[in-house]
Image 1: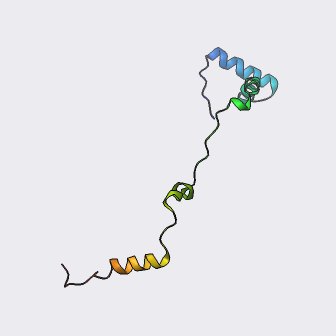
Image 2: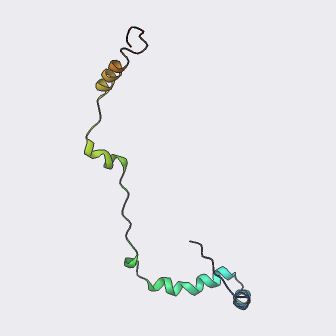
Image 3: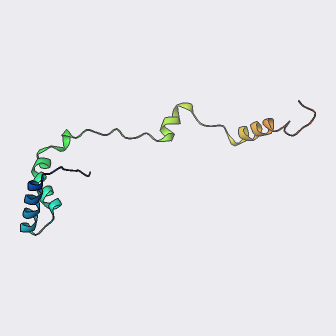
Length: 88
């Protein structure tokens, strides 16, 4: 997650001075500052994510699909009159 903090010029200068004094970046100073906050929140407090259901699971209610023979028969029935001029 990326956060954008609006700082005053004075706050910005203080953050940069602290980072320089510690020999690190301002991002590391802020990260170090929020670590106690993050550690105080138990993992159980995080919302549980519902696992996504696969397409096989979603379509399971419809049973198995047509067999290869049924597909061939349907295809033959559909194209039996295809391209014939004597059928309107």
